Image 1 (cartoon, rainbow, N blue to C red):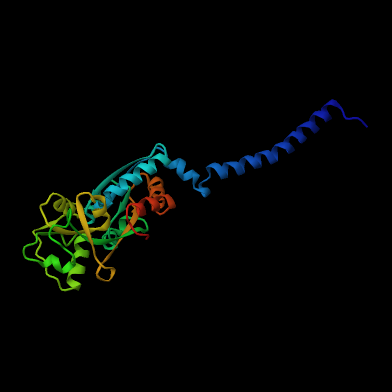
Image 2 (image 1 turned 45 degrees about the vertical axis):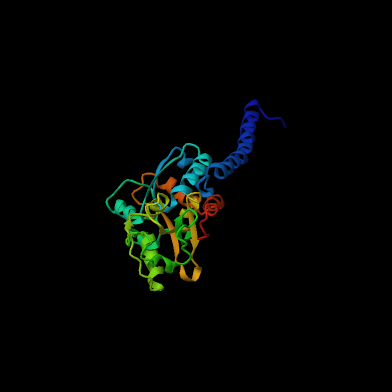
Length: 269
């Protein structure tokens, strides 16, 4: 029995609709794979074009410039501006409401002070102290105890700065009394004093000394006498680019971010 023209048209319509259903389902799967938030690529798209401000410890100055350039290259449209200072200054900026998207300090205690203003911190790297001396170590500093020499001009970070706290910790543990000629607001200022010859020696992070290896020598401090600096990173709750900030903080713990940090001399978290 043959179908009428109207019947044939109705059957064709039903068949076409049936064929479109699996195609639509495939389209939905592709959307989830390529742009859905569950895979993270949606976050990347949301982060595209974001201008991020990251408050970072002074000892991260060189490595974060490299990391920022690498991140911007792999995330087109994203621009990162870093503000480097001593961790205590960064904490003050956060508590005063300075607009920023993420915070990275050189110790966990500083980060703890602004816990109400941040997301959950993640330690992205570790560091250790060395004695920085003038090139060629002209004053023959071989050990921490040599810093107590009365004729040696020693400069340290201020006690409220993480590097200053670590310095006092290791000196006090060995009962070494050092009378610094100055106390600096951050560890990079300590390094600068030694580089310029304004100080004979100073306690800085190993990575700082490596960044100026053509201008200073580094005297290693045995692990048993040393302190381990931890660098926590966190997003700031006041960020206007929360998703993009979270993506950058997560990237610091990624294989690419970790390689950049470790190539600069930082230790694994």
